[in-house]
Amino acid sequence: MRLTQWHLRKHPEKIDRFDFVLIWSGQWGLWWRPNYNGYTGKIEEAGVYDARDALAHTIHCGPEKKIVLVSAFIAQRENVQKERGE
Image (cartoon, rainbow, N blue to C red; front, side):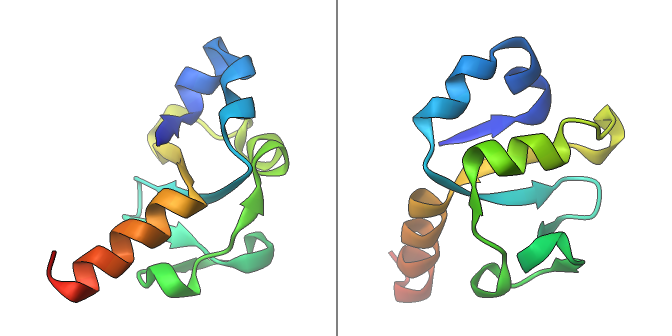
């Protein structure tokens, strides 16, 4: 499951659908690294964040950042499937 930051601004209750998330920067086409420290193109190097904490750290970002919170479980499963060629 993926929810944009702007969608979550309108429907903050939907954050409860997540436990842990990865943060995607659509502006750069990269994942946020652990501790909100830089970006990476490798999903396995992306930070895994508590969903509410991630929302609190990204809610100030403007629409040009194109922030998307992605379920960590879904992202990891999709990455494994991609590596297997599924």
